[in-house]
Length: 454
Image: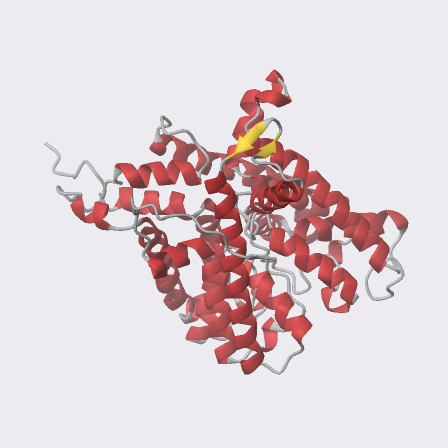
C-alpha cells in the first residue's frame, strides 16, 4: 500500500488557508517564491564566471522571471552554462503567466484553489468557467514547449554550422525560449546586431515572440473557429488579429522612414535589410526586447515611436507585457464613443461593458502614476537625461528589455528602483493597487451629482 499523498507534496486536509489568500497576494507570492531563491542561487560561483553581487543577481533574476531582458552584466560572457540554464528556467516560468504559475505552485504544495480563485485564473487565461483548469494549464505548457522546440530546430540550421553541434543547439534553445516568452535575453553581446540581414534568424525569432505576444487564448480561438468565419471569433481575438499587424506595419514604416538616412543604424544597409531591420524593431519593441541595430544611435523621433509601442505592449494572457493591446483599444474606442455622444461602446457589433471600460482606464491611470513616480525616483539617483530615464523605465515597466544605454551604468539605488518597476510591470499595476487599496464591495448607492470636467 502506498502512503504517498494524493494531492501534491504537502497535503493539507483543510484548504481554508488557501481560500483566505486574496488573489493579488497569491500572484505576488508566486512571483517572490521563485524570485528570491533564484537571486540567491545566481550569487553562487558555479553560475557565473567572476561572481555576482546580490543586487546584480536580484536584478538579473527579476529581469528573467518578469521576461524583461534588461541586464547589468553581459549574459553570454558572464554566466556559466549552469547560470544560463537557470535563466532559461526563469524565463520559461515567467512566460507562463502569474495565474498559471500560481495554480501550478498551489497544486504542487497540495493546496486547493477556491472557486473564486479558479474563476479568476480562468478569466485571466481568457477561458470559460466550464473549462478544466488543470487540463488548460497542461495545454498551455505543451503549446509553449512545442513552439519553442520548432524555433530551436529552425535556429539550429544557422548556429550549428557556425558554433558546432552542442553550442549551436544550446544557443538555438536559449534564444527560442527567450523569444517565445518575450524575454529579450541574448547570448550575443550585441543582441542580434550581427544578424541584422539574416532572414532565417530574424524572421524565426519574430514569429516566436509575435506568437507568444498574441497569447494562448487567441491561438486556440483561431484554431477552433477561424474556419467558421471571422464573425465566430471572440471579440478579444478580433482585436488582436487586427491591431497586431496594424501596429507592426505602422512601426515598420516609421522606423524605416525615420532611420533611413541615419548612418549609425539603417543607412549602411541594403534596401531589403533596411525593411527587415525596421520590421524586427517594430515587432521587438512590443515587449520582445531584442535589437538588430544600435538603439543608442536612434533619432529622438524614432525613440518616441519605440516608447509608444513599448507602452502598448502585447496581448492579454500572453507572454508579453505593456498596457496590453486590448486595453489601449478599448480606451481609444471608449474615447471615440464619448466624442460621438454615443451611449454604448461597440466593437465589431458587440457592446463592451462599462466595467471593462473603467478597468482599462484604471490600468492606464494607475500605470501613468507609477511610471511618473519611478521616473522621478530614477532622476534623483542617476545622472542621466530625461529621455534615457523615460525610455529605460518604460522598457522595464512594459517588460520589454530594450535599453538606451542607462541600465549598464545604474547605481545600486537605481537597480533597486528598476527591480520594483519590473515586478510591478509583470504582476500588473492593478494587482498592486488592489493590495494597497483593499477594495470592499458595497451595496450602498448614493444620489448622483454632476462634476464639472474638461
